[in-house]
Image (cartoon, rainbow, N blue to C red):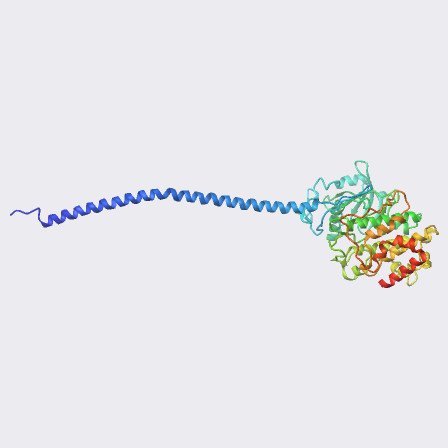
Length: 478
């Protein structure tokens, strides 16, 4: 029996085989088509990824550059505030002051020299070259300059340390102050004085020549003032200063305080102005020294700052001594006390005097408006060799400076203007052009109007009427 190989089963198998071939070819075609399609998409995705990467890199770079520019702009702006100085010319005088300084930073010792922290808004460093015009000395150099800190070279002593006369390597005679190690306050005073005096330049401030911060040693090198301090000449039996010299000293001191109060971007408050810190050169011209307790004041008129009470008894303004509120008017009060010392030859506090005369200001203030009593107050060492008209005017200025209320005290610029006509020395400029564009305007108070025209008023009204109005004005103030 023959088998029909072409029957239905064979046909079905053949059909299935054909269908499988068709399906296989279909899937192969689909896979080939999918591969071609994927091959077309791949370059597009790569291009997109590369583009995104480039754009992201550019954006990050732009952001980085913007941040860098902003940082540099801020830095240059702050440095610009430091570099922006006020140049003041008055004959041969020049004053340069910088912006606010943060005196509370702590320096580090590296390589034997100070590296300051943040002074103001930018960081300054005490490096081996020092500040411009201020040299850095080693302890060994200063030891040689003073012959081993010989006792024979001592020219002054105080709570701060010892001052020696020395000759520097270039032949310059200098006053070398060796500071005692008295903890943080002594270190702060050293930093303040170096930083401040390297920035402030005035013919009425003692010049800082250099400093030493070698290991634990702290020394300051100043220009040598051969005639010592005003205190020695008034209180230690030296040859008495004549009236003309006292008038010039009063003017020089007023100009010194005027310069630090009103000619800088921010006022500087001395905080320890007194006769011991007024030094005299070979011509008995006065310069102010010792800025270890100095403080930056407020930019606002009569703006006050709160601080720990430091200074010397007898010179402290009442509001500062009682509350710690410090303003430039605190220095004005201290100046008034020094003016009274120049007038009377007395010290601010003297318990050896009769009752009622222990405190100079309390004793003098009620007497300053009486012609007879003013004359009685004058230092006997002058032996009557003074101008009574000048005496009355200086007494009036002193009376205003030591007013108990700070608002009634004048600005130092007003004091300078009133003292200029009283300076008899031809070397003192009589020009009244010492006011400057950045100068603050005096507040108008009960006595401000007539105080600014003190000299003209005196000569126009005459002595008697002037004293009458002065007395009435002080009574109004009280």
